[in-house]
Length: 315
Ligand SMILES: *[C@@H]1O[C@H](CO)[C@@H](O)[C@H](O)[C@H]1NC(C)=O
Image (cartoon, rainbow, N blue to C red; front, side):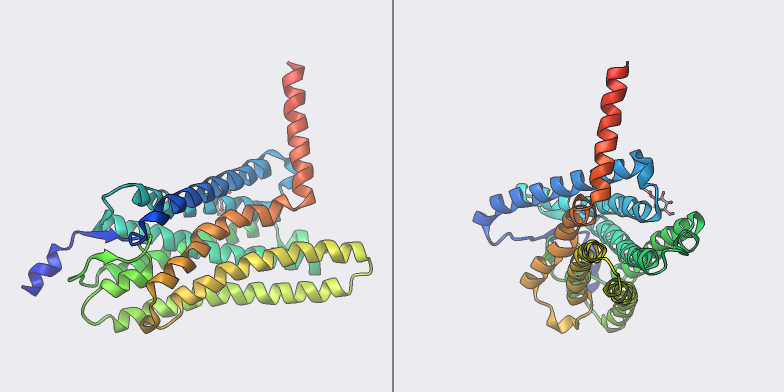
C-alpha cells in the first residue's frame, strides 16, 4: 500500500495564499507590478551598460551580469505565482517542481557569489585604486563571473537531486508560492535527516562565504573612506556603499533565516513572507540601488539618448 502511494505522486499543488481569497486580487497586482519593475529596471541596466562605452568597466560588467541574472531569477518564480493566483488549477508536475527548484537555486546561488565579487570589486577600486586595473583585468573578471555561474549550476544540481530522490508519499500540498527547499523537504517521507544535513552544509557555504567576503570588503572600504581628505569624496563613497550594503543584507538575511534554520522551526506563513524578499523585492531594488542613484549611470543615459537623437536627425 505504501509503495503504491509513493509511486502515485506525480504532481504537487502549490497552495500559495489560497486561504485568503479577498487578498488574491491585491496580491496579483502587487506581484505583477513588482515583476514589471524588476524586468524593466534590469533590462534598462543591461542595455545601458552595453550601449555606453564609458560603462565598459569591471563594475558595470558585473552589474550587467547581475541584471541578466535577476531577469532570469524573477522569471523562475513570478510568472508561475501570477498564474496560480488567477487559475483554479494550482497543480505543478513533479518534474515541473524539480525544474523550478533547480533554476531557483541555480540563479540564487550564482547571485550570492556575484554579489560577493561585486563587493570585492568595490574594495579593490576604493582601497587599491592604483593597482585596480591590474587586479580586475578582463580575464579575471570573466573568470570570476564564470566561476559564479558554474558554482550555481553544480550546487543547484546537487541540492535538487538529493531532495527529489527522497520518497514523497502522503500529502502533496505545498504550502508555499513556489517549490523552495523547506516546504518540499517537509513533504518528503522516510528519514530525511541526512538530506537535511547535506542541504544545510551546502547552503551554509553558499551564504556565509560570500556574505563574509562582502562584510569584510565593506569594512575595509569604510576604513579607507574615513581617511579620505575631501568631504565630498567621503560622502559619495559612503552613499554608494551603504545602499549596496542594505540590499545585500536584505538578500542574505532573509536567505539565512530560510535555509539555515533547523527544519523543526518550519513556519509556512513566515516563510511565504520571507521568500518574497529574496525572490521579488531584492531583484526589484537592485537596479535602483546600484545604478539609478548613481551619477555615472545618469550621465551615460544622457549620452546614449543624445547619440540616438543625433543619429535620427542625421539621417
Ligand atoms: C556573465 O558572465 C559569464 C561568465 O563570464 C559570461 O559567459 C556571460 O556571457 C555574462 N553574461 C552577460 C549577460 O554579460
